[in-house]
Length: 244
Length: 334
Image (cartoon, rainbow over all chains, first blue to last red; front, side, top):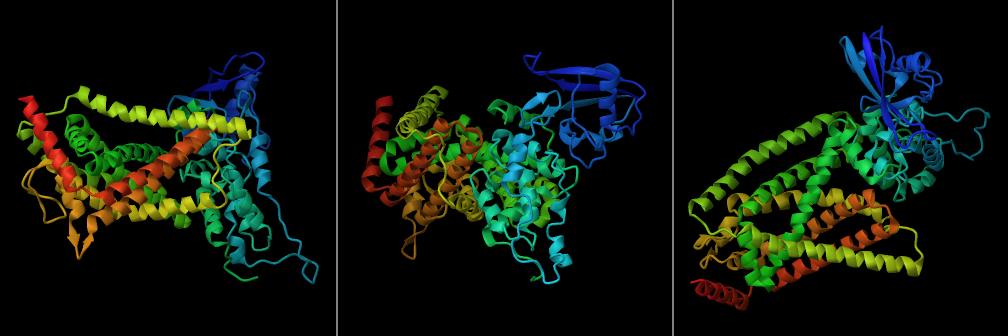
């Protein structure tokens, strides 16, 4: 099959503003991944095309971009999931809401700054258990935050959020997912501090329950649900199924 | 961060699912309802304070332009109510998220189901009215009256901008308007609670004033006023309002209590919604402060005005003035 790639290009050293460029590829297999097509454009047609990718297998989260109008990982989308037929058109542009450095590469620093603001690490200064080994947790308590451990920080959710587009100071879905992962961990002791950060005007109340984040997540994390659970934690505290 | 224009255009360009469009419609319908709310509270207060102006306002509400607006308003309120319920349910039952798309579709369906018979009744009022070959207010007159509201809004915002600029100079503040402490969480809660409380109140209000009797019946002489056992003898709009506010059940003016509750809940709900939209898009500190001040001022002013009108009621003198003025204009016309 033939595929026309319509890619949003921008080189700040040369271009006044971003523009669309078309690249046509032949002999594309329906089960090729979009990342492979980007590689073919870069390797066969225009070496200046810039994008991030590392593992290329949906684990590292570096090739998040907007494909046919929706945020996804280029390495996890097959051509046949987008369209079928002899001639397929695919539109690719950078994620919105973060500054474009070049072509499909955006400045992820503001995103990581929000990530760091919710203390995305385990906090527990209590003495270790007597056997000096791990802090045990019941399966039910572990299950509470299982879903939010899956995040790979690709920013697909945060840059699909109209609240984040409007206001880059909004901490964003990804940071709230990370906060949820620790707030609902029965072994962690810093839930109150994280909730304090998220209680600020640019915290969790900027979520408008739009669900774009949930549909954008390549890891199928129930993002909007996690945000609602953090809001609930703010209203009535965190409860765990089993006492520890 | 994207600019305001990009945010708006990209919101329309991003291929979000039904949740995104529900949110866009929730905003649009909310803003539309707030706009009418402001006009409606000011106009209705005239029944107590400026009966002659009230008669003019009702005459304008009976014109084709406002009839179209009335249909749009009802659609806005019904959609906003149902979608608000959906959002509230998902806020309190996060584990139901998987049904959100279906819920959004049900909201559209339920809105349509409610609107079809409602529009049917409203159309029958319209048909009755035009069957009697009515006098209509000209579009020019409507623009002339309504432009005063626009001038008023612009003046309030301009004043707020000047005050905000002065405040910025004096305090050297670089931040916008921020609600203190936990008030943001309290307002979030209030939006859900008030939304649920408003639902029966506003549906009752719409049912009485748009379905059972329409805006055309306000000036219907000899008609028993909806929700009362009082007949509007004169067919004057102020007598209609007076009848409702003076209707006593066990010594209580029930419709004044009803209107007072609706006034307080709807104004705070609507203006807090407005504040939410402002804080999403007007981020420049000076402008953000000014618009927020205008919102706080507007909410307080409307509640004070509405409460004053409810306490004052339509008194005899006001009613007499209305009759006098109508007779004077009527005799002047011939």
